Each structure stands twice: as structure tokens, then as C-alpha cells.
Length: 355
Image (cartoon, rainbow, N blue to C red):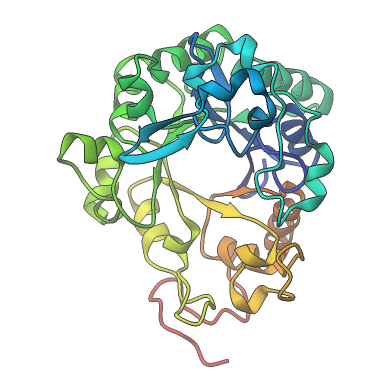
């Protein structure tokens, strides 16, 4: 595939309710190279595609009186969260729910599809991937994220063995498979390697804080420490890439405009790690001030220009809610080169240029 990869973040979440088969299929048809599901577990042990174990904001569960008593407060990564949680439902029960748009105030168009898509299993996504790969005559990749692995392990519903089994049964647990397994935690990725995971691995990084397995254990590196040259060398022992917040690649200034690139991409490349940054979205609230088009949250800003700036900083991949926009940015980058004529910063030094 040409240039940086385009990762359909939760499918085509900018156009359809996230983590639905409709969203994943649209992402593929818009040109995404990889489809990205977040994986959580049902009470009867099935991997399903949802952003979080709490399904309050992404399904119509609140409108189901038969499940009213399932609403509960639980500790999720050290925080008390009230809602409905996947581990309290069987797969059959989850299949009676319908997906809804998570950001209706920004993506009002997506609410047209509320109630029209069910919650898919990971196997259903893998089946869709195989079908579309054949139909589109290009092999689509899958980029599963293990969500809150410490939380699910504590609940007796560990994600790791289930993921390994699913990849193996679908012929995808091999080094050359179009698969990246990702997590914000560290221990589970290392354990997956030890248990026989042969696919590529991406260590996700947060802009602040520490992996929750580190917090729970009371020891380990923070995300800032993982981003140091020494921390990156440690990641390279079990992973092929990192997935930083895009602000860790190019931060914003106090006025909300883009600053200068950090050394993260160069430092990661130096130890052989790919860099796939998240999350690129077209709507104004998600863009730097200078790329916004208006004060309306639902309006698109200059999303292609933002992505061009990041691609020129050396990214190897983009997690994107609008795959077609990222495909366009990648194509333009290929035409004009990775270093822009009007770049305000030197990627090597971070020093600003005078325009």
C-alpha cells in the first residue's frame, strides 16, 4: 500500500455510528487500509466491538425497561462509572440492543442511523473483512485494541486468550498477517507475545498519566517515560509500533495553534518503531485553531491541511474517523513530498522558520 497507512478508526465513525458493521464497511469502501475495532467482552465470554465496557452512550440500552436493573456503578480503571456494562449481558441480550451515535451534538447526520445497526462481534468483523477483501480485490487489515484489559481480567473475563484464539481460528496469527494488536496497557501486550502472538503489535501512548496496569501494580513507566529514547527501546523489544496522541507528535501552543514537531517520530524510527498517531477528525472542535472554519462544532475545517502537516512530520499511519479525507491527504503528500515548502518548523530541530 502506498505511503502511510490509513486506519479506519472505529470504522468510518465520522459518517456512521462507531463500531458497527456499516461503519467498518464504509471505511473500507472509502479507502481505509485497516479497520480498527475496540474489543470488550460479554458476560458469556464473547469478544464484541464497542468503545468501552460501558455501553450507555453508544447503544439504546437506556430505552430497554427489561434492562433497567442492570444499571450499576463500578470501578473502571480507578474511576467510579455509572452505566450499563457489557460483562453484565450475554451476547444474545446485547444483540437486542441497537447502536446510536456517541457525539450527536457534533455528528447530527449520524443520528439518522440510530437504531438501525446492532452490536457486532469480533468474528462478524473478521468475516466482513474477508468478504470485502475479496470484493475490493485488496487485503484489508484489522487493528484490534484490547480495551481495559486489567478491568476485564479482574472480572474473570481476560481478553488475551480470546483474542489469540480468534486470530488463530481465522488464520491471522502470523507475522505477515495484516494485523496490529494495540493496547494502552503494557503487561497484556507482553503477555500476548509470551503466549504466542505472532502479529505486529502497537503500544498506545497517552498524552498524560500512565498505563493502568502500571497504576494497579504500583510500579512501571509513565507514558512520558515510555516516550523517552530509553522507553522506546524497551517498547521495541515486544512491539513494532507506537500509537501516540497526535499532540505528542505536534503539540499545540497556548493559543490553540499548532506548534513545532517533537522528536518522538525520529526517536521511534531510530529504534525501528512505526508511528501511527490518533485521532484525526474533520469537525472544528478537533482541529487546531488555524484550521477551523467557523464556530459551529458540526462544520468541517481544513482537515486535509492538518493531516498534511502531520504526514510531513513523518507519520507512518493515521487513525482517522473519515478515511476518505486521510486517503486524500496521503495522496497529496505523495505528490508534493513529505517536507512542505511552507513548513514553519524544522522537524529535525523543532526550530521555527520565518515565513
